[in-house]
Length: 126
Length: 275
Image 1: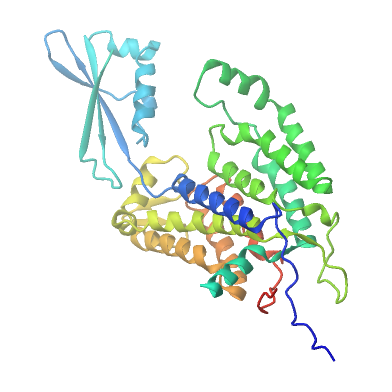
Image 2: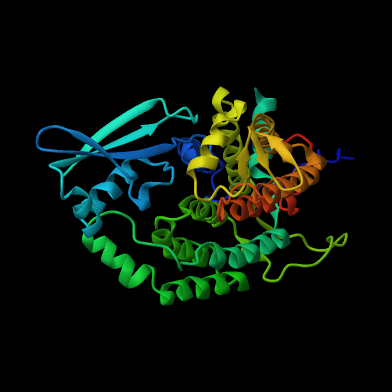
């Protein structure tokens, strides 16, 4: 009597008909997932920014001004905020604010991952 | 070495249950139109021609209706791979439109992985457990599902690592977010998040948030504990809604739980592979 054959595991399915190729596709996809995973970081860091503005006359005298309404709230994206301020400076409100002065000096007080506002970034318009 | 190779093979090539895959396919068809609703989206920065393409085509209601129509066909399980890939191609431009981009990209990545399966081997899934002796249809190997599972693990894991910074654990980041982010709903007063009935110190909230994400990144892999992890995860995302609005990312994340909770991967036989 012939011995009964050893129980065999059923053939495992594949996507590409080759286990090796399946493994390669899986490895590449996993690598892409891992490399892209840093994009999934959300709400782990913040940079609160306060904006203030000073008018500078032709003699160099500096006059503190009231921060325009769109920028009174604490912001969080320095580049976006600077872009918004620069485009505000070309609007009617911005030009009116600027009228008695030679230029406006915008000060961004900010801090990374804290509310200390211990860093400063200054730029002028126009 | 061979033992590890066998284990890895079991992990990657265990057959996926066709009926569970059909449920997952239908779930994709339901969640995609919700996640990719184009109302309120805008064109991404770039050349004027690209922006016009978005304004005139991709962000029009008609384009969303096209995505909805393809989703419905996917739900019906007709040529699921082809239709799944078609849907992914249709959704691709919307995945890059600014505004809650990550949630759409998470779903799109999962959909692309899911397209490797033949989820149409079962058109209409059964309710309840499979009867003994009933035919068992395989939708393919488990590795596409493993990719979706690992995506969820990475999503929580990378956030847990990022939030393990001293500034976050001290609660400084939460205080900063309360000041700066318009979508931060709760108020922070005297170093505590005011939730109405209770005030949670920002330090405790920071530590709890980082630990919760760390626990969720591994909890789903712990066999029967996955249900507890899912319950905990849903509770975590619901409570988060009282503090900060993360738009649709919570829905996208909870959707990925299905990759663990549906009986997709059949228990593997531990007999050694012979022959």
